Image (cartoon, rainbow, N blue to C red):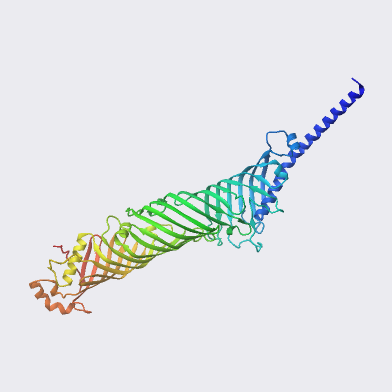
Length: 543
């Protein structure tokens, strides 16, 4: 071989070695550069989009199974890299010492390698495991900008932004926490089992689908709708709309009640304040101490205020059995070491005594009729049974009342016949009763005031107590009868009593008596007070 030819072969070989070395060096520099560059780009992007200081514990890039030389030669075109990160924290720049608004334990995604150096960075999907979003109360950011910046994620990008296009985000094990304005109150927490966010092609709100785990009552809530755009300077103002479905929730976790709840509805508003419209049914609603199931269904509009943890009813229409009523009020959050308090106003314009008594007392109801009820219900945040801490106050009216226990109705019928001066009228029909009054329930003791009870020929005015736990009556009052003493009996008894008539006539009544009622709701005992002594009234039998 000629010396000149050998020389060129040596030169070409040396050049090949130098080129290979240069390419290897470039590949090594590419590999060493890509990770810190991606880290810097991710921090810059998140800082701008969320107006936050960003801390990233670790970020690693797994390059595709191809040679670094090829990546350098092709400048990454057509190749995909896996990005893995952990311990991501975002704090609002206006509140650097506050709780991070966003914390992520782990995340990963696949991106096109070439987009890492030529934004926007494009990823089809980001996977997140373990995330917590803290929403501060409105106006809590010291030095926050006067405008509410909107973070655009996915879709169109600002020319000056370190762009990123994210088509989908899949999140597992997340928590949304709404911080109250009053630090003495507990935050409102939503545990999210899974959440998927999909970016629209033209920008704007993200579509989402979420599965939430509800703690009390236990059950899963499926929700879907639209979320965003993210309001960086006021996260609580971020819009959210959607619909939900909540099935087979066990109310037995609450003290004193039981049943299975199903609910569907829609909601809209902001993260800090949601307006929820829906319906709920509990086909087997019951009080545990009573045990009688009564179907309960509701239609409601409620405001869930994340700034104070309160739920305000606006109002609720409900049906208990066949009884319709409306409720307004709210579930009010108190201090951090206490539970929520419930405060409701209930209006029942034409209810069924049978439905109400079936829910409220053991066994079969002792009375039927129409019930008009206006009451306020309060359950203070006390560590006690519902029955013990339930407080009620209001007024009621019973129309066309009829006692279902024959013993009681027999006495009412007999009272009406005697009061009209017809003690042995064989054609006398079963009478109906009218009743109205005011009541106050506290510590399982029902106190009645200004209770009036009327049947044809007789009017009774009573006040007293009814102990719900022991089913004990303790009432005192007056009895006004249309007939005189002598007219209430027959034969020679009437002649004997006639001289006494004038002593018992008073206030336009033929007979005026002071009476006592005690015993139980099923077996009440009536007595007449004469000269300070009680005389037991006999229990007449219906003929």
